[in-house]
Image 1 (cartoon, helix red, strand yellow):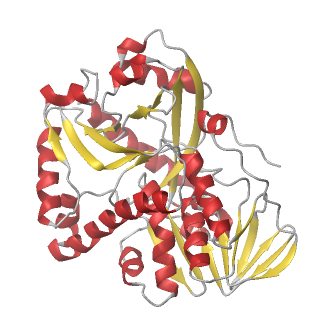
Image 2 (cartoon, rainbow, N blue to C red):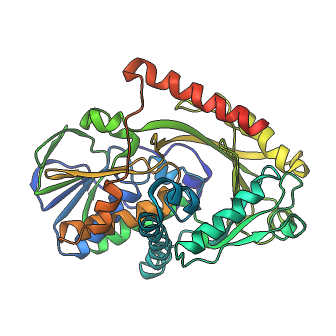
Length: 419
């Protein structure tokens, strides 16, 4: 069986039962490709709706971004309320904003309903990296309230920030009690258990090699279905080359310090997760065992740095110089996918439904997506269709130039972060 790449998540996740590879040809109602949040939430929602569901995962459940991400559960569609109003006008923005609120409520309800033990904690701070960012955060709350948002985000002025973050690096922030953080691999494994409890059958070490109509071919058999859910995010590759051109993989690196004892609570007194306002952002949180989990650094290509701790540590020390003597116990990387518009790429083509490219918002939105897909298959697809209508153009440049052009753009925004 495939083993998880080393990480603090893999070292502390629950022991999962082996899930055998698909062997032979099987008929089912729904074939799900991908064992991340989108695929697992789809398997759960569709099995609960009475469908015969089979899910295949090329490696192990939660192998990709769903088991390696920063664990930050943030509502919304990546673009804030003010940007939605500017781009679409107030009425469409109100409907899109409501999807973000629904994803938030669904997420916490899902964890409670399915009794998923994933170290879930509420609270998130968006920290202002520059003084001018505070005006943007205030405007965002005003726009969110204008759209009828049901959350209760509040501004944290700089003198009050030590209640959340023991760092001089920031100039205030926005605190959202409806956001939070989780152990991402535990969340994925908990979703898998819930899906199996609902009647779905899950197969690991089973890579899809082709899709024809609603038939999924693997190296050891086929799934003959009525509907296929394509939920493999950055692994979409040759299964749908035209969709693959709409996403770009970006490297994500995280370190975990040694257990910090009382220092952990001093660094982050409210136990809120934190992400700053830079385009190339730093984000961090406390772990359940008192470590600091910190992600940062400017890497614009997929794949891991040669030495993850050495790559990320300087960014951690810029925020928390008091950790200069702290040991780094774990360092790992993974790829997340973004779209050019930063909206998720969602749609339906014949018997195949796809959803991927969450651009950093996949924890809550990916967990909602299964419910939206189940609604669409039941004939109530208004919310799914609203997301599917969002613009997600292909990255420019073709196979040879798309990555260099993207890197050039990221370098420009990284330069702006420093100004």
